[in-house]
Amino acid sequence: AHSPARFITHNGMGNFDEVDYVKLSADLDFISWDSYPLGQIDKGLLPDIDPGDWSRAGHPDLVSLNHDIMRGLSATGSTMVMEQQAGQVNWSSANPLPAEGAVALWAAQAWAHGCDSVCYFRWRAGTGAQELMHSGLLRHDETLDRGGREVRDMELPIDPVVPVHSRVALLHDYESCWIADEQRHTQSWSYWKQLMLFYSTLRRLSVEVDVLHPDRDLSGYDVIVAPCLHIVGANCAAHLSSVAANATLVFGPRSAFRTETGRVHENGQPGPLTDLLGYRLLNFDTIWPGRTETAGGEDVHTWAEAYEPTTAEVLHRYESGPLKGGAAVVRNRNAISIGAYSPLLIARVLAHACAEAGIPVEPLDEGLRHCQRGNRSIWLNFNEDARHLPDGRQIRAFGYLID
Image 1: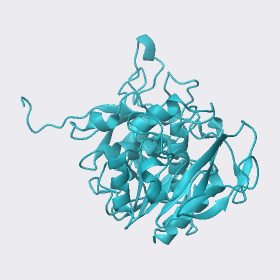
Image 2: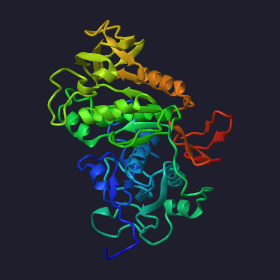
Image 3: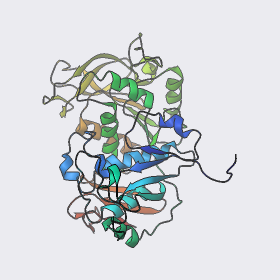
Image 4: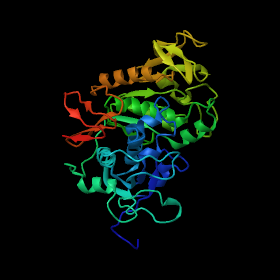
């Protein structure tokens, strides 16, 4: 009231769930965040990668998920990075120097995922206290550091205010995160790992994604993916059922297990989604670390649950273990449910759902990503070597191309 025509924001943090950012952002013009790509790689959110392989620029999906989360919290679809890593940090388990080109790559990635502004932490490296080994755009002696030179020399041929258009929505709910992680049932599972598995699979298929709370308006999306919507009440179920006529819905394991007060649905799972999903949950199995079972011809690890179809058809069954013969993936009209924690099986199901909806699918090399913002096509290479794009062009290591 005393400072009109000025925006209000607050800087969130990556994969942070001690605050419900949906509620926090409700009174903000937009939410911003602190992007430290090299601080994300050792959190175990992509357990099938070696963090050392990504220690020079980070893994693209670990960063882009948070860009997309923050963009989805903004009423305007606009967001910014309030703190962007400019060189080595000082607070991670190891603090490597980023590769040449990484700082510019992160700026291109931020723009590709909807950011309209990137601010750097920090301007000059601190000369005292706990962050004196944390880099800035300037060194301690006020000369331009590597990151500072990249920011100075960076050219982005872009229109900074065009929106990101996605035909796929991925649902993310902090209360589901809290209660699911409180009772994981196996140490190797977490809500964030499962969310990241579905998100990264879509990104590796070159699919644009909006990350939204399940209460948001979902009309207009062709595919809606709910990796771990653990809490589902009657209102949420009615909302999801209302959009199922015009979109394909894909649910992951542990969906609709609890009521809004944290109790299990005493009439069985998936509770109020039973009519939509067309199954009854029979059993779930936490697979011992290092062991795998199979479903649909693919390895399954960490978690598996078997369904008894009521009105759904069985797409894939378990082929080993105590759930052998049970339904691992079922489909009830426009709703698909995946009970197996299987990266390759999940990729097959998501690729088919997107292709069926007319969404282009282009499997990409690990570390190579494609984005679309407005009429600009953006290619990002987080690998330590050059890669070839599908059209035959080459993109340099730690580089980006904008068409």
